[in-house]
Image (cartoon, rainbow, N blue to C red; front, side, top):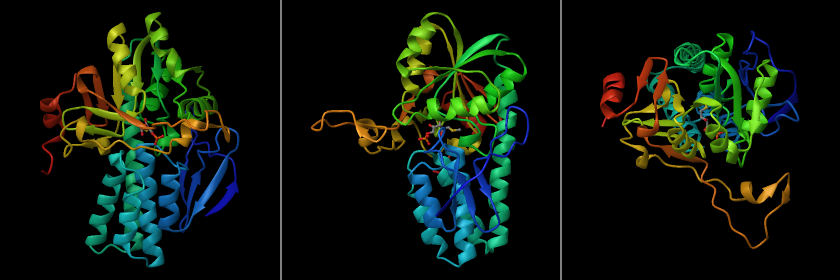
Length: 348
Ligand code: MRU
């Protein structure tokens, strides 16, 4: 894995960041562990390096890890590596975001059909391009739900850094800003990894969208004071009944939103929908190293003998969700029947 420094590409207004870049025989990843202090790029030349980058959160966000994994399969094919092993290793990198499994299933189908490395590269590029197109569509659909002049609150990072570009929840926010439906954006810091503070605030500043950071614990206080009309979040897996796994802290935002009469929107491409998972209880929640909680800025900040529990996702029950927005449309007040109508039954 090689580290380089370079500036970020600038494709268009309010959407200038591309964190996953294919370069023909290597995958460049903007190292999200280092942002916003340093913009460093990592170059992956085989599937092992891509799997490690996904595990270590160099690249993160449900759609982005699926896209990176697809390119990992291409790298393995170019090197003549065993593709079943490469796919298995990439699949095991993180458990909760189904986009990872979805992208690898797509690649495996092409492998089984006898695709060579060029055909696999075409498939990976399609996965990446489709994600960007889905995000733009969801931006339009989601923004249309928001009354002009609204303030919104988002959680984690769901933007260009987490996707092929533009973003899911952050895509709705980009579109809402363009259309002047959104007047103010609040972002929760998203402890312990600080995706909101480190990534969302950087990304929005980069794209010229003013935003205000709040401590996660300030969200209910903000909602109580009537500032926020919508909480807008992404998803890592949406189960067949509409229950939604997303970054830890999302569930409490949904509870608070319901209590304060604030609407709650989940924005995710259909690749995040898993009709084979019946409900939120069946979603595996990733537990990460407790040190993410015990250490701050490289220094231990909690008593040596203390332990910590670090689940990094939680599940919001569908009853707390006002709208699920995918590129296929808006599902108001989602439940199992509406999900089935929209996405069909699962395979088993
Ligand atoms: O642990 P992370 O940073 O990969 O978690 C990311 C999230 O929870 C996002 O909200 C989700 O993946 C949607 S990203 C478009």
